[in-house]
Image (cartoon, rainbow, N blue to C red):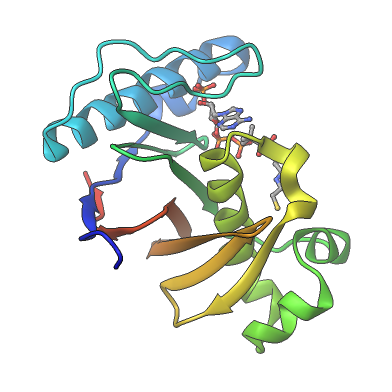
Amino acid sequence: MMPAATTIFPVILTVSEADQRLSGRDKVKALSRLARSALMKSCEKSGLHLNSFPKNQKGVPLPVGGVHWSVTHKSDMVGGVASTSPVGMDLETIRPVSDALLAKVASEDEWKLVGGNRQNNFFRFWTAKEAVLKAVGKGMAGLSRCRVAAIADDTYMTLTYDETRWPVAHYWFDDHVAALTARHFSVSWIRY
Ligand SMILES: CC(C)(COP(=O)(O)OP(=O)(O)OC[C@H]1O[C@@H](n2cnc3c(N)ncnc32)[C@H](O)[C@@H]1OP(=O)(O)O)[C@@H](O)C(=O)NCCC(=O)NCCS
């Protein structure tokens, strides 16, 4: 029998105009800091505690006291999430992409699952795969082992990484889409 689904609270924050104007290292630092603020808000909502954000030599976030975490930062939005099981979150701004990227994100078999316009679906696939690759701690190196297995509707799909199934939830807002994955969960998106 499946365990009862735990509610996960991914938090999305808007980057201030002043921080958006930064460049180089200053911007990376500001976005990273804000993503950790989102993560702390996720902790508060979930009743979880994190007092440090350690990563391994490859930059993969390490759990602290059984609390797993994931962050994502784009130039105008950031996100953070904490969970008692491995978790991955990704966020993208929807924009036109090249045919080469359409082919990179998914195989013909995976594209057949979704139908419709590939441009419109590109960032669903992209963010879903990024979220799973973060949850398994592989990053881009694991891309060829991560596949779209089934699509339920606009907000839920299932991916596999090798033989393991990862449900993914999407949240659409303005011209952005965010993806969240964990092994078994219900989701409550929070945007400030
Ligand atoms: C690094 C990667 C995990 C995500 O990168 P990204 O989408 O550019 O960046 P995001 O802002 O969403 O996420 C960055 C966070 O991911 C985390 N991260 C980095 N490497 C990671 C890894 N191997 N596993 C899990 N999490 C990782 C870090 O916490 C980082 O934030 P921090 O530096 O503030 O701690 C990786 O997938 C990558 O290099 N992607 C490049 C884009 C691409 O080609 N994607 C193809 C998808 S189809």
